[in-house]
Image 1 (cartoon, rainbow, N blue to C red):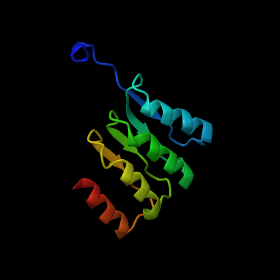
Image 2: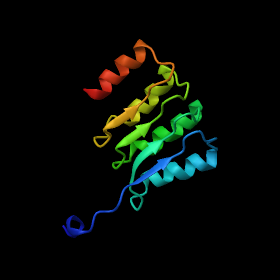
Image 3: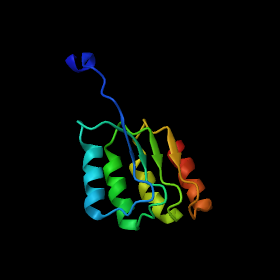
Image 4: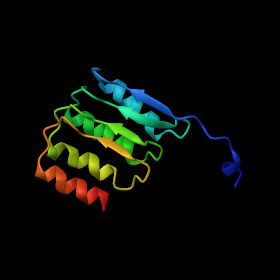
Length: 119
């Protein structure tokens, strides 16, 4: 009950646009996503060209995150089969309000997976 009366934390947005993301960097970001002391509300990986293993690592970090509101994965040359694993981790996330996947190599399979996520 005391946690209800604690002051709200300010949200943090992390913009990694046009960055080369190393494994150590992504590990730190994913640990921050699951750490309750950090309150990350926005995350942008626009033009980072994430690889499949990096997307899996990000999906694992997002699986238990309950604060992220905006996620930008636009222009990463992602394919529908890669995004499927990310969507599985977002099934229980009720806070995400804005997901930008524009500029990727997505097809009808992506649309079906997105519809399933939004159900």
